Image (cartoon, rainbow, N blue to C red; front, top):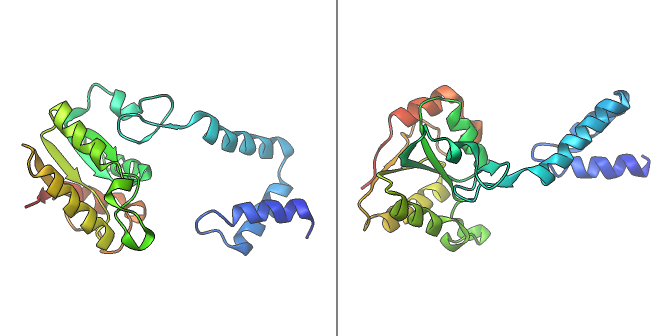
Length: 197
């Protein structure tokens, strides 16, 4: 295979769920398209790094310092939903069951991968709860070992504060990421959230 094709296929294979055959199929498809269509795709990808930033408040994807959710005066500022990654926000928003704010941790505590609580934005979460008059923190972390240990750590840190801590109901299968959970299940889990002791 010629070098330009190998180079692009190699880059596509770095994406999650894309192996050699899928990468080849995508590249060969692009080669059959109009060059203007391929150019628009490359410009859109380029815009990801040039235009998309991280919200200075919650860690969501944004254009500018604040994301649309943190800038929305209609959101309930007394509630913060804690998620591990920004794409979990889009999934929860699709349920139309939550009207508060969010906080993105940037991952989960995972000693095997050398991710400690200090590597996550837990300190920033505690500061937001203390400074912004938050009344409820909702933990929407994956129901797997890493999510549970992260939740326990956050609960321990929040315990001295006068804030209700709840978690979404466990209708989500254990070991499954929020990203792959259908919105009906996620919506029901959100409605059935309960307090954390």
